[in-house]
Length: 128
Image: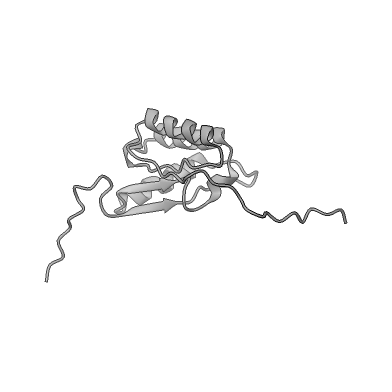
């Protein structure tokens, strides 16, 4: 029995990995480690890379940091065509700015959430 791959003509083929963003001790993004990890994933069978998406650290990063990550990966030789950057935010204008930047860099697709908000966040900041 042979399993025939029918997805080779699909935009991102078969394997798309959710990529965690390595951070330094000072909580800044480690661009070199991020690019190195992305390169390793691509050399080992991944067709596309979901950055700033389902690993959820992007919600803790500012818009300028997220743009810097996309730019930094491309500057370090990661093909924008292989990136699926997460662009969803709670602010529509920020989402549009991220999606526009991804397009300008050459990304063929993005991961986008509809506008959202956090319902009933805990307010446990009490003076001790």
